[in-house]
Image (cartoon, rainbow, N blue to C red; front, top):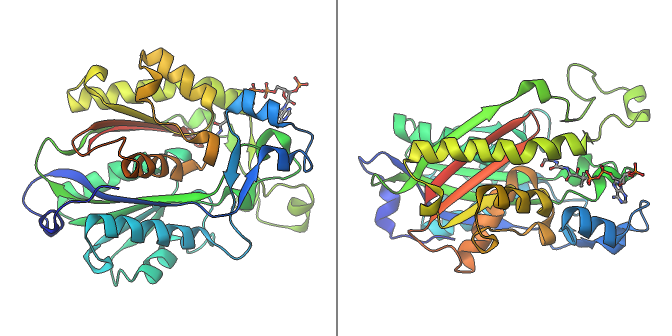
Length: 339
Ligand code: UT7
């Protein structure tokens, strides 16, 4: 949460994309590792040792990604001292929307009351929020928008195969959001760098439900509407890709890691977070991690971690935060932001 004066919400001639408020939402229903022991052949010990995850929040039957996005969005608007009518562009980073068509964004827009402001879903897997920062920066710099609401909202529990112990222990649901406005140069997004490796497209995918394999009785019977992941392949790629993106974003920002106060990596696995910190030579107390409580919330993971750290007073206004992520696609990217 970052609160700024109302003046910051009136825009201006400056060009930097500044985060002026953040919010997040986790569904109240939590599921501990031991609860999963009766669902699949797993154990609390295995999950903690291999992932660092202890519990995750899951949506109730009647909740939707848009519902979570609306709460996170409202909290971000409140922190920014803005109202929904100030938003002139809404971006929703998500992997599995309310409806395949028209997505999640229109439902968030309708419930928030953003009027005729444009909106769209941004699908870049777990890198969705960082991709969203790049898009928001471009929208603000071009003058196409003056006030962007960027939401990451994910309900991967809806596409998790609860018979597959290799994936079902990993994911959680939740949403995070930030409001971005133009601010003075040297504040906000100092450098952002986004990338892809399409050769790795099938490392994490859902085989059916798209044009390649439309839904049919056969695809349902074959359990092809769930996420399938080559976990160790993703694991091996994650650290070098996040490191590469971070180096490029730092170069764009004209900064070195020693000038960064906090690193927020995508929260997929504590072992990946620790390996990244070691490789970067960053002390663990400068790395924000909440994967133990929220598990992997995909595109929502960084904005949730950011918002929690802001509200806890760990990250303070003026701090430089390096965010880095990787995900399905394979996508990867990083952003250096002065809060
Ligand atoms: O946001 C991006 C999306 N995904 C990720 O970031 C995930 C990245 N990958 C990972 O985090 C790790 O690869 C996993 C946590 C998914 C797996 O950890 P691992 O150390 O790579 O384990 P593994 O896949 O090599 O499996 C080791 C063993 C296997 O048994 P065998 O073949 O050695 O007998 C698995 O069947 O662990 C078994 N296993 C489990 N055992 C108990 C896999 N899942 C479980 C489980 N409980 N939940």
